[in-house]
Length: 363
Image (cartoon, rainbow, N blue to C red; front, side):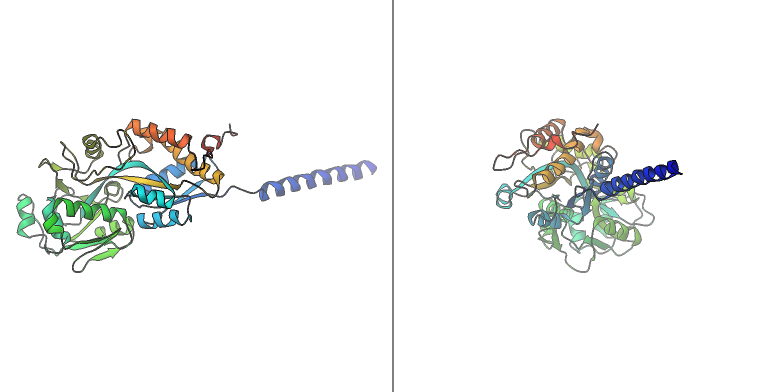
C-alpha cells in the first residue's frame, strides 16, 4: 500500500512536470510572421518562395498581392515588412521615404484575348493597332486594321471588350507606358494616372490580375493584359506583337532574356533601366523588372533581419528560384551583387542587420 501511494505520488509529479512543459512550449512567444504586400505581377513567384522558405525557417513569410501602389503605400507607412512594385521609385523618393530598393526578377506583360475560332497565340498586333484598340477607337475584331495584320485568320465580328485593372497596378502603368512610348498618337487618349489609367469609353474594370484573367476567359471578344505566367496557368490566349526589329515576337522567357541582354540590365549597378520596346533579335517588346522595397532604418532590426534573410535564401537558389514560373531570372552577376548587399545590410546609422545570423542556431 505504501509502495502504491509512493508510485501514485511520483507519477503525479511527472504528470505535472509534463503539463508544465507542454504549457511552457505552447505559450512560448513566437516570432511574428514576416509580411509583404504589393505587385500582383510577381505574386505567384513570391508565394512559391514563401512556401519553400516556410517549412525550414520560422517564422514563415506571407505575401499579399494588393497591387504595386498599395505595396509602396504600405511599406512607406511601415504597415508591412516589405513592399513590392513593378515600377521602381526614383532615388530622390527612396531617400525621402527611407527605403532600400532592389530588383528580384524580370517578366513580360502580354495582351490576352478571347476570340472563338481563333487558335491560341495566333493573333498578331502591332503597337499602333493595340493602342488604338485600348483607346476605344477600334470596336470590332473584324476591323480592317486588325484583318490587315492577320490575313490568314477568320476573325469574328464580335465587339471588343476591354478588360482593365481597377486597382493601382504596376502592370497597368508599364502597359500604358509601352503604348504611349511606342504609339504616341494612337495612345494619346489613354491618360495615365499613376498605377491606374483613364480609359476612353466603356471598359470592364476589375481588381487584380486573377480577376482580370477570369473576366477575359468568361467574355467572348475580350482583350486584357497580364503577366506572362498567367498564359499557361490560366490557359489564356496571348497575342504576338511586332517588336522593334519588325519581327512577330511571342511572349517567352527567352524573349525576356534577350531584352535583358540587349539593355545590359543591372550590369554595373542596380539602377533601373527601361526594358520597353528594346531593339534586339527575338525581343518581346513589353518587358519589365520588378522590385522590392524595405525600410533602411527598420523599427525592429531583428524583424528586418528575418525579412532580408527570406530574400537572401531565395536568391541563393539562383536561376532555380524562377524556373518554370514564366519569368526570367536576373543576370547571375546581379544576383550575386544583391546577395552581397543583403548579407552586409546596414542601417543609415551604421548598425548591421544580422541577416546571416537568422536560423544559424538550427541544424
